[in-house]
Image (cartoon, rainbow, N blue to C red; front, side):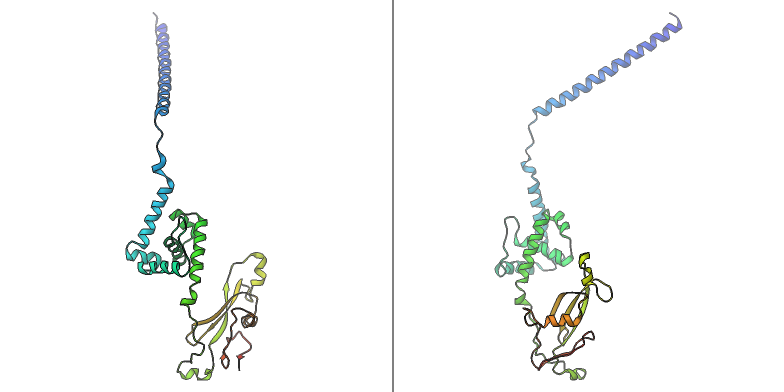
Length: 271
């Protein structure tokens, strides 16, 4: 056998070995896949009952809420801005006096806790949705329920000052002996639709609402009228506030005067 024939024989043998390895590898892979498929058909399906997403969400939610208002005193105060006793007293009061009650899936305590997180720290409701695994609709609905319940109790806790309060015993107030207090207007920036911005644009070209405020001698608010467009004059807002047909009209007691801010042109004197 010549050298050329020997080289050709070796090359041919290498090709045959390579083809054999490819065939064996293919057969091994096919056998492996068939074995996996066979075992998967014989394996009993996993019981997903113990891995319910709803149960896990409920456990997670209860853990967070219980730790917040039934855990350490400092935790409750830091997160809800109330002590544990004050929190539970508030929940009891809303149940007994305001008619707030547990729903099928949400307790009064959870409703009040989520409400306090929003009003106390300005936490977005979408953040609460992700943290406490509640739908956005559920959070908004129960927030409105708690807000309505608290507003229904305002008459029991918010008392208007006595309009007959005498001025402080100070010489600088002696010229205002029969005065009730003082009032002025304040512009508060607001966001309104483009179609309404013309009515809310004030004389400084800012988009605002004109709010009327009345305070007594101790700078405590006696009356507030919000909602007027920024383009409305202070005198127009005042006339609307004193319109007797209003259910919440501002009435100056007989025999008293009301010093006005520099934005008002006329004084009010009621004899």
